[in-house]
Length: 88
Image (cartoon, rainbow, N blue to C red; front, top):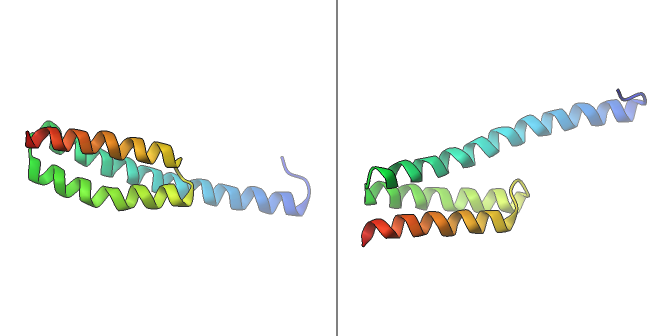
């Protein structure tokens, strides 16, 4: 356990940040799940709309450092491939 006042404050702020980031990470996962659900239902319109809504959120979280930029790019690429496969 932290002993100095500054270490105690640091522990408090880190816990707040951890909880905040957990909510944001959950939001990103929810957007991704919506795309996958639409793809599995073979609904091209819904999948396209869900993808368009998810891309800015994924990019924003990568900019903030919540997820790595390469992971964001990989997710977008794979999701886009799944959506485009429906159109064919």
